[in-house]
Image (cartoon, rainbow over all chains, first blue to last red; front, top):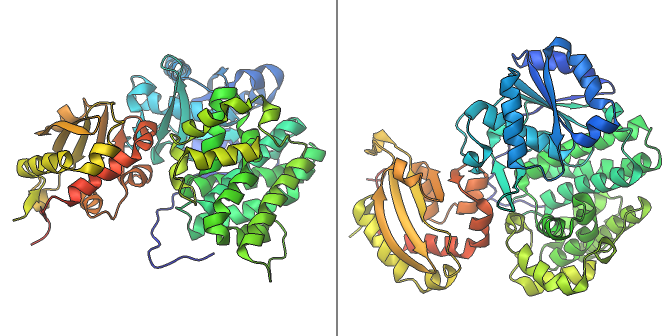
Length: 388
Length: 141
């Protein structure tokens, strides 16, 4: 991995990370450490109805809990954020505790904005427009994948306009992340695998990003080592607390890496097939990642040498191109070992849609940081066909 | 002769440079999303006592109107990009790519980033047009 004299970057990682089995039981103290006393729990409907996790957090917060807002759904919407903020205001909340996956944490980021600034979340669409710290936010992830507990972006859908809105601001990075492996043991194997590969894609994409830099690279490479070792264990035995814990750490590190270095073509494709055909984000990432590695290798093969080493390849004596091919193969192997499907066709994407998907992918913001500059839809169509 | 940035003369020269640019005529063709306003944040030590807004009515590869505006007017545009003087100077020198600048907080965008990204060629062509204006910067002798 080489850097030249033009290296120039900003690295932000402001989240206090508290890790350990049972660490979610510190939530009350962490809320108070932020100078707050009335926390609104933001969680998703499924987690609230099928598990006791939000209830446990509520009980731990005791009289510091202002209420539970459990209306979050996948692809959370502006109207949900606005309703959550109104509920928080009505209950006198002075901070947010999010419990769940990416949707719950992103919704909480939105609520944190509206609770502080007023109006509707739509008023704050944009990048870096907020002028002050937002409502304090403690994030408790229950999946090991999104890394949203340390990122500066929230993706919220405007269901009226049928648009996904991006909110990017250093002021919405959660203040605290409680990484408690106990809370992820209930995640079924297929979701453990798909979210784990989401974390892997964050790490790989941070490294092959045009904005890669040494701090993010270091985080991403160790995340890759952890995922390689512990994802198969977490999938095979959901009660393996060591594996669950290491996956939470890997997801967190990969999140910090991509929040700074950005993601690339893997995510641009995953966003597109997710929006059009509802393919699970982590699964879509895992399907296309090996093919994007091969695509990028034509121009930035050297990028994949340290990735190959982190995946356990003995790289001495290998060419950069060979390293890149082995990265693609190892990623496919990992998907296979964790039982993930490996084709877009298996996810209901019709072959006839590929040209339109390739065209639509060009409009995704993630594409601008991809290690190999994408020149047109024709190039993308080849990647789509390979992943089909 | 160089023209001070920002100033009404500079905005007029920028307007001309955009409409004379074959790159913008081509790259800006898909842009049908309305006005983009640029705001230079105040910096009293170089004589910029108030925020300086530049209103650009861009449509299908043509700049239909460009004028100096207040920050209040700028914020009514569908896309409004704020930045400190030094950041705009970096953009004009092509040292800072605007979309990357927005994502890193060096520039601030009010509006839909996805639309900007979809039209990144138009954004790049606009920057090229700015480089063609013989510019004198207020913080340089």
